[in-house]
Image 1 (spheres, helix red, strand yellow):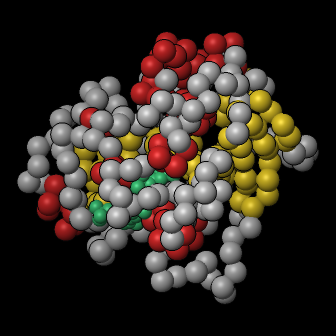
Image 2 (cartoon, helix red, strand yellow):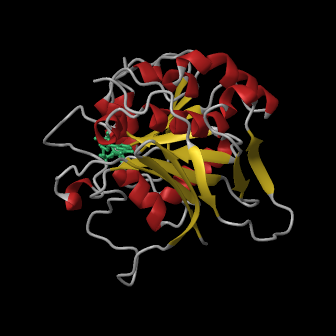
Length: 291
Ligand SMILES: NC(=O)c1ccc[n+]([C@@H]2O[C@H](COP(=O)([O-])OP(=O)(O)OC[C@H]3O[C@@H](n4cnc5c(N)ncnc54)[C@H](OP(=O)(O)O)[C@@H]3O)[C@@H](O)[C@H]2O)c1
């Protein structure tokens, strides 16, 4: 399927006035000219001082659907965005800024050829992204972190086999036992955390911190994002609204799925809208979560 919104600028529509705050660490700023052609202005993420900052990126349909599976396996965010090229641009910019990209194993399983780098999404801008990361004193590529309880991964997945992309598989002891039977290339290491059946969100944060990262990008999927949100570890959400009504059961396929739990007290998590951009019919919303 051809990409929607090919070549469109992500034009700024509105941004919240920045509250005057004491000196903060920040990542980003004005984009270099090669990247600013389609994203004019500034892309800055304020960094937490006492822990890695976590921002998330999702694309949603108008009716809140972010994933079509499991009845439609091997479909991903592309089917939700209509393969929006502007959405891929936004994803690439966030990967360009991040020290690590974190995804759950469910997201890994939907596409065997995906690599979690900016260049994978925007190959024509490979040099521009490399120059930007170098200007920001970042490693050439973000580290990919895959979270899995089962360890049931495909070791031949492209995202695990790019020699220049470090990968950490964060798992349970059972998961590690399973992974030990597979053969991974030298850029992949396995890290066991906790003793339970799941990777606690706090332990995942410590793995991220252990890499020296200041900024982590969570690209989902819904289960992993839900757990991070519930643990109050998500600082910002970059949410693309794609102009389709997907018409699926939103309780199974919605953003931030947390099975059998709520965020406590039955109340949701509220966020503050901080910016809006538009590319054709796609809206790019940016929200900040409070502590
Ligand atoms: N629209 C979007 O922007 C977007 C973004 C991302 C993904 N998606 C879609 O979402 C769908 C996948 O949904 P999903 O909710 O299954 O995705 P997911 O959160 O990526 O994957 C869930 C799996 O990740 C592992 N996992 C997550 N949290 C864990 C934890 N705390 N401890 C241990 N393991 C953990 C488990 O793997 P094991 O099963 O190995 O134990 C779990 O089954 C796909 O269709 C994908 O394309 C959409």
